[in-house]
Image (cartoon, rainbow, N blue to C red; front, side):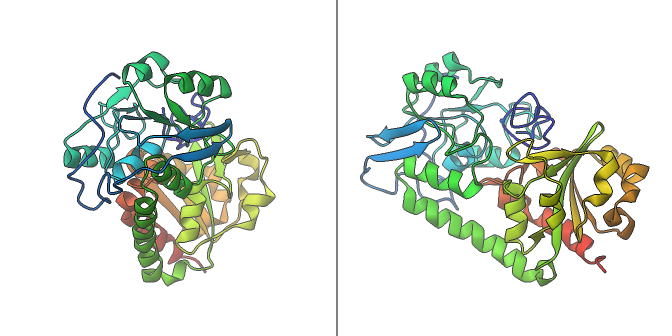
Length: 346
């Protein structure tokens, strides 16, 4: 895919997550500020910009002046900017769950509010440096991406660039928001935004007290592989916020093949025990195929009916991983499916 890291097949290594996951992720245009955002903190709410230094995997980036033209690369950072009232001048074109123009539905809603639409940058293993340069950015936000140190060096010659803190495709979604807020001089607004999102998730958890303490494992089942999301993945963090506990079997079977998932042999899927199994599925057809596959009948969750199946690329992308805009956009669908599965837990 491009930026959305949904299924490890199109993984945070773009090639892998080209499904993208999932998946894992121009030219001059209008300025970034948005004055219309209704629910987001007001753009440019801070009258003055205090220079900041942001540390990341490739060193540190000093931002001396408030960025006006923002380019994003990867997942999460464009949504954080949009939620803070700043429309990027350019961002990576998406495919998994996206429109023909390369944008997610919650992003297009934000564009309608701001009256601005970013240039869609050509996706690929490496950023399209010429397109990014043509967008004349003041800053490049790639704090949830897979850029290499070589990519970072090239991007830094175009504009101040912020990379991920430690590992590619592993930045906690809240850190994506706070880092973008810091880079844009809107740290207070970013904290306020997180409080509002957390309040919605907390309300959902309160309305579903049966979630608390139930063990859960999150998986993506491709025709050729069975992927399990690790505890460090933001998808799991979201489930824990709802009250679930990561099933011990997830860690016990972990092969540590990547920062956010591992592949489990179909001969061992029955060892992935949990009260609830959350399965991310792109289409109804695929959901039916999985339900009929005898391989998964060996799993207790399938036999007991405690599998929560979330269907649809856009809905799957909403928490793959969650962003400042997508988490609340898809919250109700996830809660409903999880509640139905928990109801069958013995």
